[in-house]
Image (cartoon, rainbow, N blue to C red; front, side):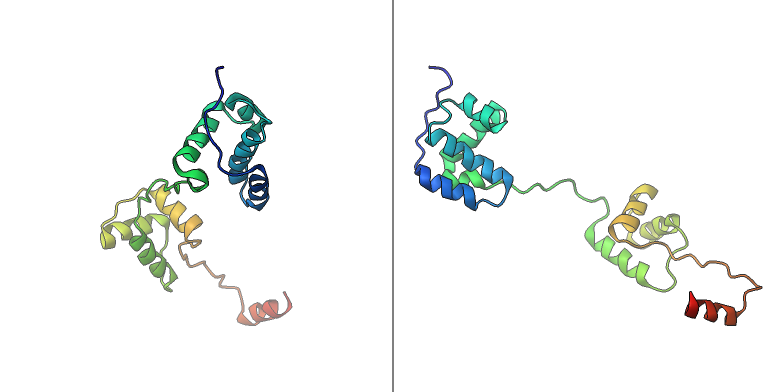
Length: 163
């Protein structure tokens, strides 16, 4: 009969039920639930198990392959997602963060780009530098704001105390 799996599940139905309750993440719970469905014969085929879990048949077959190769440990371990490397290395980000904390700061993001190129030898687009400084380092260039000539220091202090 097509679709019938050939896999011996070592754990008992009760063990799988306890494991199912103990799982913290939804993905681990799904994987244990697959074994439970097959062991308790609620699903006779891989296709039936996939439909009950709301997953594609190929995904379920991949989980069963992991179980076949490494048991429960193999089924529940996943490779960490590394993602893309940052265009500005961590050491340069640390140096920039220290420089941003100094009093003189920068006048603009363009000036930060030039500092990176001149001091650290890193050429990076304006958009990348802006995203790094604004969103990841949670900083901004320190721009001196103009002060009105008509403003008196006494009024400023009064406003600070009452406002």
